[in-house]
Image (tube, rainbow over all chains, first blue to last red; front, side, top):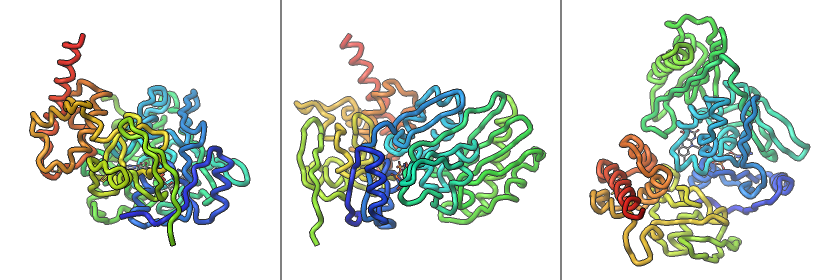
Length: 270
Length: 166
Ligand SMILES: Cc1cc2nc3c(=O)[nH]c(=O)nc-3n(C[C@H](O)[C@H](O)[C@H](O)COP(=O)(O)OP(=O)(O)OC[C@H]3O[C@@H](n4cnc5c(N)ncnc54)[C@H](O)[C@@H]3O)c2cc1C
Ligand code: FES
Ligand code: FES
């Protein structure tokens, strides 16, 4: 349970960080380390260089405008969760973040790190896709913006190149009259979800995002589906599988229950 | 092949330490092996159990999920830094004694640091909030009931001191 040796750099500028990444094809970014360090300790990953971005200036901000919330690469889950203005402009952030790990992990783990880590069992990639957000990325060729729908290409795989750094994620504001809801079932509060569901209801449009069901963060459109058919309509577009935590049949049942629950919550007044 | 070493300055419980460490040294190992501060325990070594929890600038973090080299500039507090200099137990420690909040004690350092920070943020937690405060820490012995009681007792001790102090 000890990482293999690696070279370590802690650049003081984005340019130096990008240079360090392009200088070594085996280099990897270290942000909060809450996903990467366990992978290193278990030797599931053995990068030759770690580029620690925690010393980069100006990346720890959470900026809120009427258009939405821009979360810098070094903003910790805890900072975003505690941000009242962010919760006002886009309530789904706080609803979902309170389910991301335990408070201690949230103190160190970054929201942007979670988004580019691209774990289908993580809440925030699904939230970003459901809301139609994007990630700003810096690379050797300059900066680009990647829409959430183009971010997830496979299990634990984002479309970022190895020598790119995500500098921020943008979550659009909740449109006037639109509503959101979030629910998940986990063995213990703070554990990864067995299944999680996030709903966005805007006028007639009903969309639901699913955590821990498919092997990539997945959103399905349930516009026009009758209330009693919601769960089965969602399952028709999903592919729940067995793992050590739950059987596929149990996951399917959780999809039925949670889909109905989040859509009801986002459409009816309690 | 010998591994290259880096200069690392760690500030732990108010004392500055200068070390030469390989980059891959986990903070938990640096505390235990290099600084002989063995109060910080290592259970799972992948972030799940909470035994290694220390405070970084007052916030609880997993020492097994940080490299010592990344801890530069952070003020670290371990369980050794919770009692007063004269050995007087902190409120949280005192409450654990009174409520039998520990059995084997392996998990205890992580609970003490987590609760210390938790009560600073929320000095008067409800029963639910007290349970939530310790949700990220595992204990194989106590069944948690007495640990929840200890959170509530520590809050009570804090409130008493507020009254006496003012
Ligand atoms: C016990 C435990 C429970 C957890 N439970 C949950 C949970 O329920 N839900 C959940 O969503 N997460 C959970 N997590 C993971 C946590 O949310 C992580 O913080 C997050 O997944 C990764 O963020 P990080 O900053 O720690 O990234 P790191 O671990 O530093 O990096 C993760 C990956 O992303 C890359 N990366 C990070 N930042 C950037 C960047 N800016 N640009 C390019 N690449 C980058 C790294 O190279 C690495 O490959 C849990 C973790 C633990 C240890
Ligand atoms: S040893 Fe760090 S969380 Fe278990
Ligand atoms: S007292 Fe033994 S593990 Fe908690």
